[in-house]
Every structure is written in structure tokens, then in C-alpha cells.
Image (cartoon, rainbow, N blue to C red; front, top):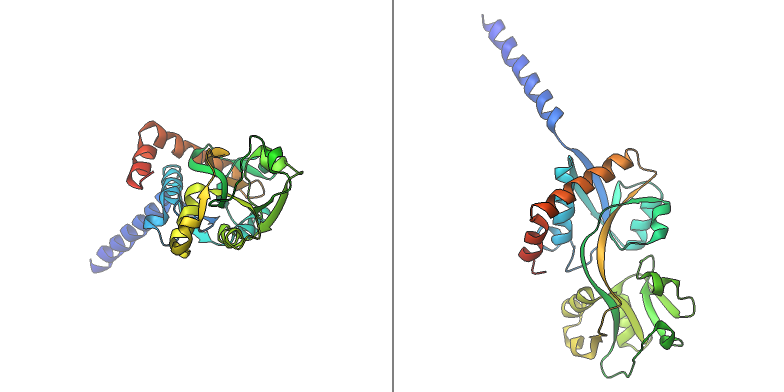
Length: 248
């Protein structure tokens, strides 16, 4: 009798394990960067961008693990097929060559920072010819700006490096998200926050995207799962609630 009971218990345990495995979400590793106040390892739940991406994938049947690194490395690993996807990215037609690009979700204003008091004004990008402009290597900015080969663009590994160059008068302008730039000043150089200003209006208010490398197995399935989850979140007001919860 004891053997029968023991056998039943073992069988039930195996069924439970099999059932939990059957219903468990697949896990994905996504590459990203520290880009506060949007996303970062030190933010609550890694920031609102991470929360949106995680919830959308969860609704699509995937659990997410984030790997934070420099953006240039993010791009390199994605091209090599060593990550399941990466974010947050700005849209560019060139991205479609190697990636499946998600539906958009809210980002922020992208534009120029300059030293306060520096007399710079422009109506078109042509007016900025001759000025050295700091950009981050591997970043997509705007279609018009990225195509403007007549501009003098100085590459750096991060927005923070560009801010330091701007303050040291090594560049005249830098391109960055408004809130990222202000956050970097507040966190790293609070005594310099009144020496730099964002040039209004922004070049563009950007949406954000998740990219799934086409060389990734099941890329189309992963892409569709995210878009399905994101559409549900837009429809039921979850996106709006998350933005409000994080002060955006």
C-alpha cells in the first residue's frame, strides 16, 4: 500500500512539474544601455521603458532578462546574433536591413544642447555648417540630421562624454534627448547645470522601438509577440498608466 501511495505521489509531482514547464514563459535576453531617466539598472524597476517592454513581452509569452552595456557593444552583439533583441532604438529605414522593428511606444524630445550664453541660432541644419557637433557613436538621431554629411560631427562613446566636451568648449553643440542630458548634468555635474541649456524647439519628439535581429531564431515570432502585447497595453490604458506612474 505504501508503495502505491508513494507511486501516486511521484506521478503527481511529475505531472505538476511538466504542467509548470508547459505553461512557463520562454526567456529572452535583451541588450540595452543605461539611459536615465528612461531606463537604467538603478531606476525603480529599471525605468518606465523597461517596464513597458517587460510587460508587452510577458503578455506575448516571454520573460525578459536585461543586459546593460555601452550602446556600441549593444549594436555589435545584435549584428553578431548574440542577443535576442535590443532597445530602446530610434526608427531608421537602415535598421530594417538587419532587424524586425517593433511598433512604437513613447520616448522624448531629441535636440541640441549648447553652452548657456553661446549665441547659436538656426532655421535649417545648413545654418550649423562649420560648428562641431557631438554625437554618440552608433546612435540614430533624425533622418535629416544623420543624412547631413555637410555637418561636422564629432563621435563619442556616450552622452556624458559629449557633455564634458561641450563644457570644455571642445564642441559647439551636442545632440541628445532633453531629459537624458539634464539628468546626466544633475547626477554627474550638478554645479554645471546652469552652464548648459537645451535648444528649443527640439529636432523631433521621438518614439522608441525594440529591434529583433533577423538572424535570431524565431525572430518573427518574438517580434509578433511583443507587438501583440504592446497593442493590448495601448488598448487597455496600461501604457498611459505606466507613463503617469513614472512622471512622464
